[in-house]
Image (cartoon, rainbow, N blue to C red):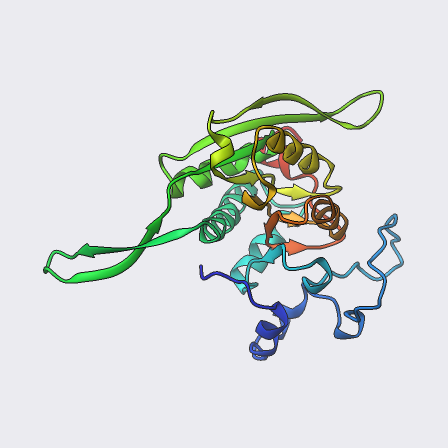
Length: 261
């Protein structure tokens, strides 16, 4: 999948033959720079469905996968409460693979020359060494296989963060990384960004181990505007890659994927 660093509004304008591809973004009338950010509230059955947020309101640190019919269908199946667990896992794995592939596209490459079987010199690129993955347990572990399918020898660390029963604040219970994690680019994996508190705590742990926020790429499937904004405000240099920013996130993801619902 090609790198997608351009403004998404340009892609919308160039894709007039697929008007349904605009459903992820807020109406143009709501993208005024002076408008207030969306406020989350309890769902009202009589109210209109909440509309997804635009990328412009969250800054260049947030990168959205180019929306197409394939991604939209995967998002729909994952959100559908009638989806069987087998179909859920299958579609989740497909969406994870797309996110991982684009995450790898954000990592540094170097130019190289190889010789083809016919003797032709081909000018290409290759990964620069020094990358690793870190999954936030438990739901982040769902993304590990997708990363290993793309990078067979990549090292993967883990962080376990849970809410304290008394204070309800995120608390780190376990963290294990490659010894030289401070030298590496980190693909931080967490599929659902709801409040952003868990990810913020995980990034703090990585910083304590010497990782610079600008070397962290957060891979997620779904994010709320509040979650993405909270992370970006706390760590302006971090990169967030996701497929959708919407006020309602499928928080059932971990339970459905691992069959604990």
